[in-house]
Image (cartoon, rainbow, N blue to C red; front, side, top):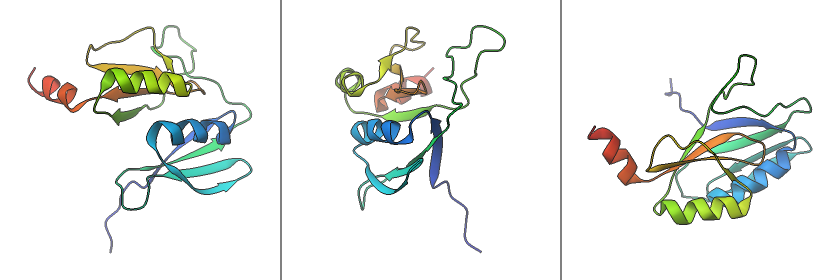
Length: 134
């Protein structure tokens, strides 16, 4: 019996190909497989990382973060992306199509929204170390 392991995270979007293109730029991933309404991307051969898949959902509703009112579409998950230079990578993500969240709960982590509105965080090793020391 082989151990189980997480291989892919799937995100719904109004346009799977558009969102896949954003994450390809952000993460340096390549397309592994695609269909008209679905795309799988992953790290380059030999590199570590979890694959991401995107599925077109015609009735997709953008999540609201932070949630403010009952009935808002809740964020179901978010992606944490480790970076070496928080300021530079935040600027690069915004240039690729991300939006910086108005609410930033930590000084050493940046919360952004991808083009479909999914929240994701950029963080550095220093951010993780400061959290462990608290």
